[in-house]
Image (cartoon, rainbow, N blue to C red; front, top):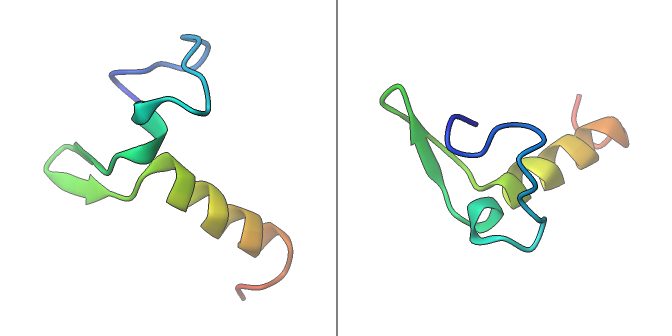
Length: 47
Protein backbone atom coordinates (compact mmCIF):
# COMPACT_ATOMS: atom_id res chain seq x y z
CA UNK A 1 0.00 0.00 0.00
CA UNK A 2 2.87 2.34 0.65
CA UNK A 3 4.35 1.93 -2.83
CA UNK A 4 1.02 2.09 -4.67
CA UNK A 5 -1.44 4.27 -2.80
CA UNK A 6 -5.17 4.07 -3.41
CA UNK A 7 -6.05 6.02 -6.53
CA UNK A 8 -2.51 5.85 -7.92
CA UNK A 9 -3.77 4.36 -11.20
CA UNK A 10 -2.13 0.94 -10.86
CA UNK A 11 -4.01 -1.40 -13.19
CA UNK A 12 -5.25 -4.82 -12.07
CA UNK A 13 -2.96 -6.48 -14.58
CA UNK A 14 0.09 -4.74 -13.10
CA UNK A 15 2.99 -6.68 -11.58
CA UNK A 16 2.15 -4.84 -8.34
CA UNK A 17 -0.85 -7.16 -7.90
CA UNK A 18 1.03 -10.34 -8.79
CA UNK A 19 3.91 -10.11 -6.32
CA UNK A 20 4.05 -10.97 -2.64
CA UNK A 21 5.07 -7.91 -0.62
CA UNK A 22 6.67 -7.09 2.71
CA UNK A 23 5.47 -4.36 5.07
CA UNK A 24 6.87 -3.65 8.55
CA UNK A 25 8.82 -6.91 8.46
CA UNK A 26 5.77 -9.08 7.65
CA UNK A 27 5.19 -10.83 4.32
CA UNK A 28 1.80 -10.60 2.66
CA UNK A 29 0.40 -12.56 -0.28
CA UNK A 30 -0.07 -10.95 -3.66
CA UNK A 31 -3.05 -8.69 -4.24
CA UNK A 32 -4.56 -11.35 -6.48
CA UNK A 33 -4.40 -13.99 -3.71
CA UNK A 34 -5.92 -11.58 -1.19
CA UNK A 35 -8.70 -10.80 -3.67
CA UNK A 36 -9.49 -14.52 -4.08
CA UNK A 37 -9.61 -15.10 -0.31
CA UNK A 38 -11.76 -12.03 0.38
CA UNK A 39 -14.10 -12.94 -2.48
CA UNK A 40 -14.51 -16.47 -1.08
CA UNK A 41 -15.16 -15.04 2.40
CA UNK A 42 -17.74 -12.59 1.04
CA UNK A 43 -19.47 -15.45 -0.78
CA UNK A 44 -19.75 -17.51 2.41
CA UNK A 45 -17.00 -20.06 1.78
CA UNK A 46 -14.98 -19.11 4.90
CA UNK A 47 -16.56 -18.95 8.35
